[in-house]
Length: 112
Image 1 (cartoon, rainbow, N blue to C red):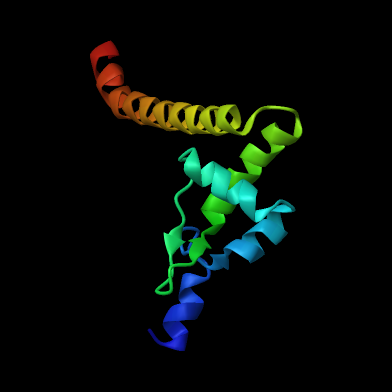
Image 2: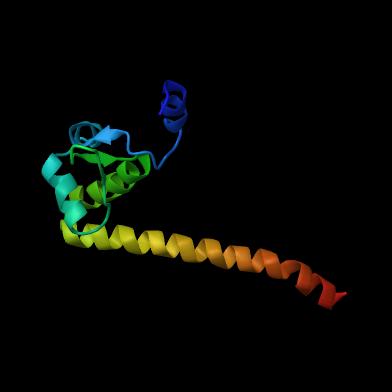
């Protein structure tokens, strides 16, 4: 990978650019919190060649949502489940909207 390739990846939300220590620092949490949400399958960090956990910006946003719930008193396991369900609902709503948009021309044609 060249330097140009590396810089281009910095805009990629899924590129695992953050070490566990840096991720914890950015989130204002502990490394054990990141391990815990990984154990509850909220996020699965990629591993470097040396086996170290690496996190993407998308994963950090997901972890931040879980941390907000935990800070409000929700147990980690429940917070992870809530975030997973929220993501599933968002995806279902996106798919439904796509289906509605795809059906609009058919509905207009039959109404005319």
